[in-house]
Image (cartoon, rainbow over all chains, first blue to last red; front, top):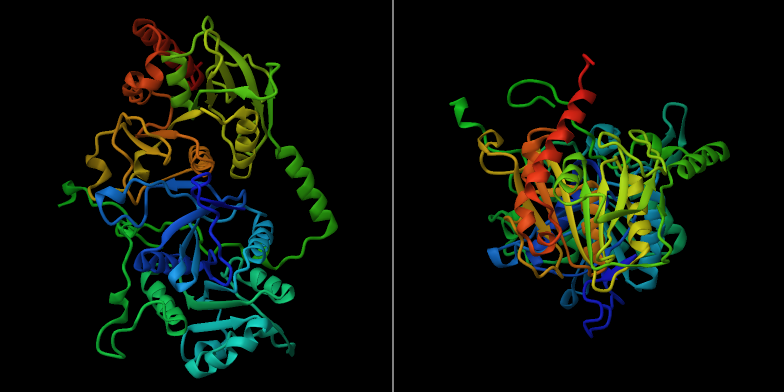
Length: 268
Length: 276
């Protein structure tokens, strides 16, 4: 359930009509979540509310996007909504995993919020186990997209222009019958469920995903967010080549110490 | 995953759902089993007072054995406080019953009310509340309280190894306190605030999130300690809070506290001793 930040402050609940909702799937390497962190931090988005739910493991911490002492003290919770009206963009960041058996109710609540808030389109950032790719998927780029039929009509052409690769369907019974093909996103968390539900409910949804393995997934997050930027142009790419596009994204302060604390000095 | 020192550590998968959970369609039998388990895991909050909705100005929640023992030794006593509620729950680690007669070594979750000012409530929660039960705990406990004028204080402990810092945790002097507060909390905090990228999980996080979302002023004092069992040094780490505006008026005579604290530890030591 969406709860706006400042209730009773006189201001009406934020209006997301016609906005693009950008969100991560909690998936292998947390790539979607890391990419969302880059978007929020780079575009300096303002927090407008919480997604209050019993489906996610609770967690709290101080402002993950703090830039200075003054804005470091601001409590953050497991699911928060950020907005940037000038770009008609609303972002849902998820910071903890799902509680067992709760991913289905989460998807239902989320999609009903998408419908009631009249968002124009949902973009889901996700990832899938690199080691489970089939022969066809091993070739070329590790990036894939998926569009629901309703969105396909609107932006399918643009994806062709960009020369993007659609996520391949794989044989349901490999080696026995190669004609029955199904969508298979191992390690993608709620990606498949959310996508198939959106297809049947007529919600315009795009899934952007990267094949990856667990480890230091910061480079994967940069690749995925650049992929997103090719399409949505959230930030201007300064030049076509030479400079590293990743330098334009701002790494949030909370990414410090991802690989543990300092070493004990007695070691040396 | 092999670490810097070469030992192999099994890292929990960050892939979201297990393959099995994702692919399998639920059969009617599965559904029935799941429902039965859900029913069994449902928590019950039993209030012994007559009021439908408790008027509450201060609510102090102590989560974990050390925090609960801090309340027992420095604040609670049977003269000024009465038990008004109990949580009955069942999960893989812990079973609590509806009895309010508990030993300090039991796992329990009890609510107390100050007799001279019934708007002051305390909660001692030394039992494990599972992930799927935390939300219910919140809804059921806060559901029976009026939120107007309410201020919440949460005390909890966690291992110092979870503390993220530039230096090595070996050089940190533990135990130490760190605080997190909601937007509405305006009072002075008695210790430094928890720095990013540190986070707090479980029931303390659930309570603080609830307060943040619903605009209730709340503060969480997290004690980072290197002892996981009941321990005087850890319990005493909460002592600076006794000078806070909130707890100052509730603290009891210090000499008595030390006595109770000692008794506490002897009881728990005999319970943990294999040579009884």
